[in-house]
Image 1: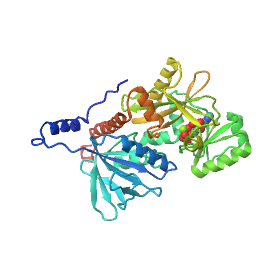
Image 2: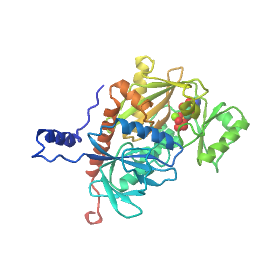
Image 3: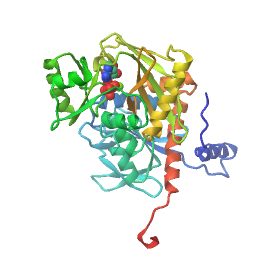
Image 4: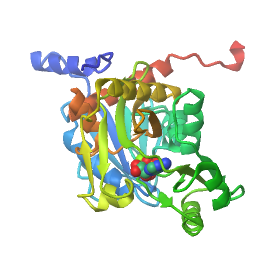
Length: 383
Ligand SMILES: Nc1ncnc2c1ncn2[C@@H]1O[C@H](COP(=O)(O)OP(=O)(O)O)[C@@H](O)[C@H]1O
Ligand SMILES: [Mg+2]
């Protein structure tokens, strides 16, 4: 499968061509400056470091002039001196608007250290995948990789994801939303949904705080723990089904990859099976399913992506029940990106290798930025 994208990267390719033709007469255009932003304040800080390490290893360094920006667990930003992710930095920074992108400002000296063309957030979870940093990118007027503010926020919150999917007539698991102020007892939820139940903090990832409960005692403990992580918790019945995932890529004309499957030995795909017990979960790409079900998954993933206004990338996760229904569980807008992660692996199986995938993502970020720059803004004088 091939994905055709507009070639706004062409000027960089073109300049490299010219440079090869005759270095004496043509001054090559500077390479696109891309800042990989990783780490972050979320529970998925370490996963982000792993994703960024893989991206750094595989990204085409001939094409991009890279900067590494690390956000520590407290939320402080640092510009690393070189391209070693493990290196410490003493440059506390922030981004401010520049002339053609964003400037990297040293917050202790007030000095502008550099300028970047594209921000590439490799941050999972809150403050990275939830629209907050995307809002900052928009405020400083820099192109960035991945979903915009709204889609990031909507996909981060499992309650709002479901509301939008339901409105688009896309199947979801039944659920109730609980807040500290608005709770239900085990008996009430059991009557409505039927135990065993899944309890999940609405805006977390990596299965942190996700619990399967069978009775009132387990329910109360899981709920208490859930509220330690989030102000909103969702409860669903146990869905018996295969866990199928589909990688989606694109802006206005997104494409869905060949799907993959997660097969776990444990009761569910928990934090331990994701990251601790390496032998617990296996991934199967491409998935072993009849063509019509693969088609259904790919089409539903793209419909969901569009319903939520996603851009760039997202991984759409399904439960496929024994009666053939494809129910969306959740949508991740910055999915794991190590070289063994589902998102790049599914594209690899579909014909787009890891390095090329990164080119597409940067290209899509630039394409969206250029489109938005062309929008009219209304000033009071023109009213
Ligand atoms: N309603 C459910 N029925 C069965 N399994 C579930 C249900 N909800 C979650 N799970 C299991 O828990 C895992 C983590 O839940 P998920 O909603 O994907 O949260 P996270 O954002 O933390 O990945 C899923 O991959 C699945 O194995
Ligand atoms: Mg999940």
